[in-house]
Length: 333
Image (tube, rainbow, N blue to C red):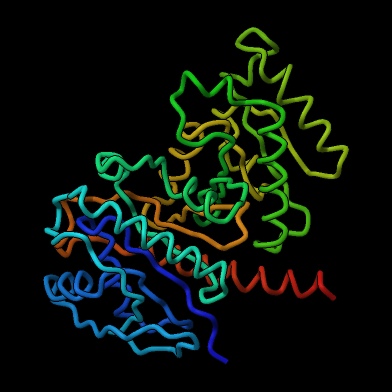
């Protein structure tokens, strides 16, 4: 039986997303891949790169396809695209591809969603409020999203995501931390098949507050919450100073790290696995993975793009969909 297809949204049409889709289509995959995009965009970019690409119409029940082909669910561009030149006129197109793919996952036509990079600035320049994929997907699915990046040997989830640094401390509340940790714990069990995940939790302040001399959030908020969740059965270690947490001795027995803010945890992960790491949204009723990089407008159409992160995102989504199916079947029995 052919596996249910994965949906792929190339993201910003003037960026490297269409290039990457043309590149990964050169490989025969173990499940159907469906690009939710404008067919002419993919065809033109493939021709620009000198890559053979046959576009197949997507229908429910899609079979496996040979190298050099990819299925397409067509979404029309709003304006002609030039590689490297963003155009607010196509912002609505980008959002339509995401909404169509996400609803396809909810309806069971796709088993998961893999997203290419979008350009937040041009979407907002079009007069459309947009903070990112995660918030958009949560609005459609009703989920409680948690951002996690993963590469071989390391997973880092975030308690806060795209916030100015001066707002982070106020956002670290017991309610937020409990919600994030429960989602992280449950999805490590259900989507990564880890029976009792061990999670290392960063402190917010330097030296994890140094007993209150460098901040009180660890004493007043983080430690009491971790103690309560340990009593509920979670394996949590922390709060730990982030400058020593990311060392082999501590990481060797850990299944994931929870960082308090974006640039506390992600520089370490991207140093370790940039180009091979995957952005994963936990806490949604669908599987969603993404590349770990931006639109790279200067590389669009040049043939110098590396599809490694998109390949890793597709492979991770495939693993998660299989694990999720097995987990649900076991619990149903």
